Amino acid sequence: MIRVLIVDDHAVVRRGLAQLLATTDDLFLAGEAADGEIAVGLCAELEPDVVLMDLSMPNLDGVRTTARILATQPDLHILVLTSFSDQNQILDALQAGAEGYLLKHAEPETILAGIREVVAGGSPLDPKAARVLLTGRRPAPGPALSDREREVLDLIGEGLPNKSIGRRLGITERTVKAHLTSIYHQLGVTDRTQAALWVQRRTAGDDAG
Image (cartoon, rainbow, N blue to C red; front, side, top):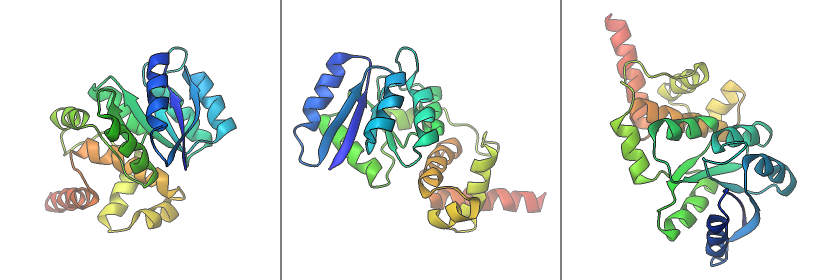
């Protein structure tokens, strides 16, 4: 069973999601939180597998809640479920450690599949959110990668798998995946092969210069 914590400040949304989980045999409602502060405490108490995270909440928003939860529970999976498809909010959520980003207008089966996907190591992304990222992506020659993201990207260019990258940098494989999600969106690529090619092109350009 996959234990799910629902975090949303609207009771009707929490109720609807709880009813949706009840229609499955493999997803279980571990608890509900109406704001980020409550969510942080419940994650420590209930130890869910997945958090369905809203972004716009009182007291502590979804991005800061995500960062606080993962600071102490790095193996927990966070899937954003929100009404917002603004590029900055999407990037902020992914950079905070969220592994997926879905919009509330998604079909029920899409939400259920997204929960299962993050547990399996995937990064579900709503098509509209993906278009926003691709349309407004930063130019490839100079993405605003953090120092850690650049280290991960360089090791991708060397052909290392996630587990080896994690060992090399002293971080978990899950953290590597979170960095990769952010890197892909900032480079405007969709997988590690394209990211590796980006590194090769950059290196070739540096050598030529």
